[in-house]
Length: 388
Ligand SMILES: *Cc1c(COP(=O)(O)O)cnc(C)c1O
Image 1 (cartoon, rainbow, N blue to C red):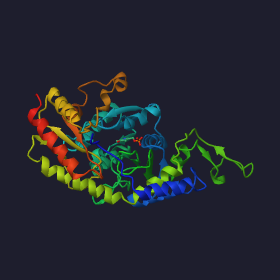
Image 2: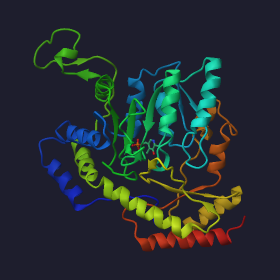
Image 3: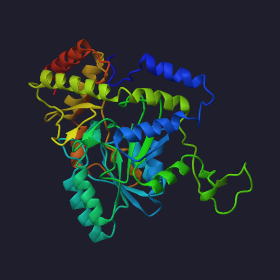
Image 4: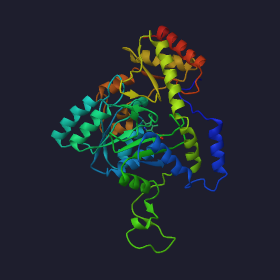
């Protein structure tokens, strides 16, 4: 099976991990701050807070922004469930903004309409959480303008998009948001095994997130409520978690970061190869917006006017022929858990239409051109032969 995504582990990654295993610290040592600083520098943000997953990063990000019971978070229905779940962890409500059918990102036009209505009804969100679907930035300029107009905070879920650019500047520079979150799961752009990071330019948010990732505990005398009892002393100031990244993971992440541009560059080469090979097929290919440079985490095609049966037949035909296609994502509002919260089929028609047509083709830096040609061959055959 040719997988849809796969990590790229080089000898230098293995060496870096082994060096850490032989060092004094497996966790809470020097590799984590080094990784935080390197990522922050790479994406042009002031601070990085490393955690054990992007899910944890999303949780502490919205928590640091004060999200709690009675608040609302709006995100895209086309994302991994974790993006919405972070609101639920805080006891807040979730709502969704339908997608732009070309980019599969939250539609800024739909957001504008929904904000207008929400203001009239007194149900504005506290945080908007756009997702950089497939690695391509949403319309952050417009989203940020709208958020400012209504006094709403913005967190970017850039789990797919480390190494991407928007308006010529790195995604993660937080020019349009309070916090940006990255994932280092093995299928993403770079990996630390499991891992994530929240980056921000706001010192207070960085401090709060740093505290939340480690039990709400501080050892800094200037942050304590009173004088220290002695050199052993620490204080728990809030209710935090153990969301720490290990030094073993950070060492891997740091080593991977060295190849970020190479990895994203190779993804673009392969994406362009797909573009020309698939051009004549009756499918919609990924649309690149002029002001973005995608990290190309995913190469998603849409079948045109597909029946449910045809979509499924094409998908199964490819799987049966050893092509590990995937589907990103099942609209979050149609998950049974979210249906218990009142969402229904029909709530977000563009997302639902997308779900009936989308297929993720394999794409990862180490994919060979021969494997890619095989994907093209099988897809061509599937579109020709599958029952409609
Ligand atoms: C992968 C992913 C997450 C969760 O990342 P983890 O590091 O696995 O917790 C969140 N949002 C999106 C859009 C993702 O793709």
